[in-house]
Figure (cartoon, rainbow, N blue to C red):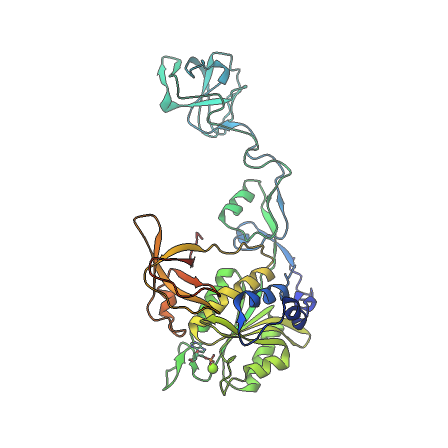
Length: 437
Ligand code: AMP
Ligand code: MG
């Protein structure tokens, strides 16, 4: 049920200048990271085109409507242990009892007979609790002599090891909310309701290209002064992980006509366009003038390191429009600007209600030089300390072209806008790259 004909949400987006004036005057040559994030956050809008997919195909997609439990889960009181189901009222004040076994209940094979006072039922984990039983004694806690179960004092109280009907989900209760980027637990939870399909927002289409005469694609011969294009690979990989549909437009030479046709093609076929390179003020950087020609684009120098130049806005071609991110060319700067600006914006466009990522305090292993007035994202590895904290060490040279500094790292050390230098032994914020996936 994809609605390809629906207008792109970009058409409804507000004017960039208007947002910038709301956020308050700023110097586009030294824009604080937080302000750039705010402008981007206000500008981009969710797509809001839904489609129905099989539950397994929904992993990593964004839920478009609340999933409501049609029934209680579990649907019946059941045993949480292998042991004996009993009436808690039969336990003595000290928890002891001697009970006669009157039957057996297995998961999927319920015991349907009566369980009179003073008796119990052999029961396995997940089996329905028989006739009024409200307590389960684990088998390892008791002794069986003939057909009698002896429960010693002090090991059990009424209600123990009994799972209650509806304790996981209650009928009518929203169990997974719209806007959730679906993870394995959500897929399992929806399956526990017996639901085979879910409504998700359609995938975001993101086109990307690299610009620069020096760039060669993998498979092309290297020449003096050339470098292999790595940005298209890191961008591809980061977009894959976000669950976007990607459109790779290759390397585009520093040529105004080629750049214009590539940007138009991107705009006509994608919701968002990401470029790398050509947004600083170098001589062959035609990117800026073409972007300005095609739309409503702001050119910023963000007060951050790495990754200062960035273009952001909306470009249009033949009735289609797309959100534009013009990232710097340096390979580390591309990743840093993607993670700190583009990722949030794309998640928002995808309809995801994502929480901001947690920063963990870690101990700086060595002095970190930093001047207030810009945000720095240094790459670091962390190691556990005997006191339970983690210490962080920078991954060598932090040049914005040194991709190894990212590859080796466990995450970013985030040195905030107003923060100054950090001394060895002081705490500093760390943003890990990996979570449970
Ligand atoms: P630019 O922003 O175009 O001035 O590029 C800045 C630096 O990043 C230059 O050293 C470029 O060679 C390098 N660079 C730009 N694009 C890429 C790319 N796609 N892959 C690897 N390096 C790049
Ligand atoms: Mg260039």
